[in-house]
Amino acid sequence: MSDAEPPVGRLGRVSSDPRALAAVVVATWVAVEFLVRRRGTPLLADAVGSGAGADMLLIALTFPALAVLAATIGNRRGIGPNRWRYELSRGAVLGGLVGVVVYFVLLLAFAVVYVFTVGVPSVPTPTGGAETAAWVLVTLLVVNGVVVPIAEELAWRGVVQTALVDAYGPVLGISVTATAFVAKHVVVDLGAPTFRLVSLIVIAVVLGVLRHRYGTASSTISHLGINLLATGISLG
View 1 (tube, rainbow, N blue to C red):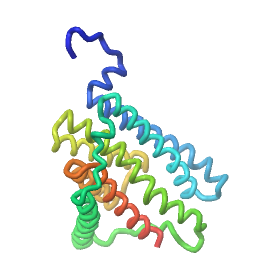
View 2 (view 1 turned 180 degrees about the vertical axis):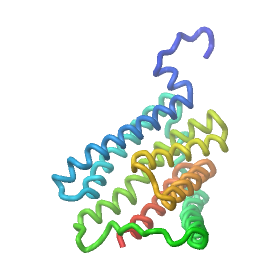
View 3 (view 1 turned 30 degrees about the vertical axis):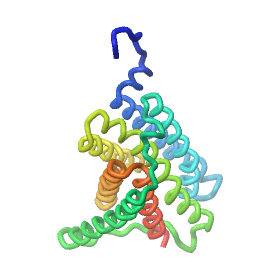
């Protein structure tokens, strides 16, 4: 800032400091998601008759709103649509599809090593089943498979990672974004078993690299593919 410019307030400092911008977006997202899912889900579950269904309904409302908020904050710093890089080039599409394959290959490799070194982990009960209402299954697939990836990629890769790469450079910026993304899931889920934690680390790194190399459209394609497949498997 030049000497001729007037002093800035707190909002001005957020808009001029990419680290502060990223911190505000991350803190706001984590706080809102935690409160909505931990406080709101139990209340709505009584009304709709399903905890999982209530959780997804609230996420369907909350995540797009948080993504729009993140995008609005990003615009104050000049991280607008021209920097989110929603480029549907051949490389972006292929990169996104390759990212899906890389994610599942790495998880499979970890699973094999884990079984041979530690043993077979306990398998959680699948979300789906004959006792689960059809609307809940559809909601899980649509929200977790489509809404969540689109919203998270705009906020976490389009805005947060862009800001942190501006501040720290590609390697550290991607690493800090990935760490924050993993930590967010651990906090709102009240912890994560080993396989879940590894899956979060892998997806955070894969999406971060794709975003930096090919743009947010590429990381969104990959996130959509991963979540749709993972959700479909969990419902089986």
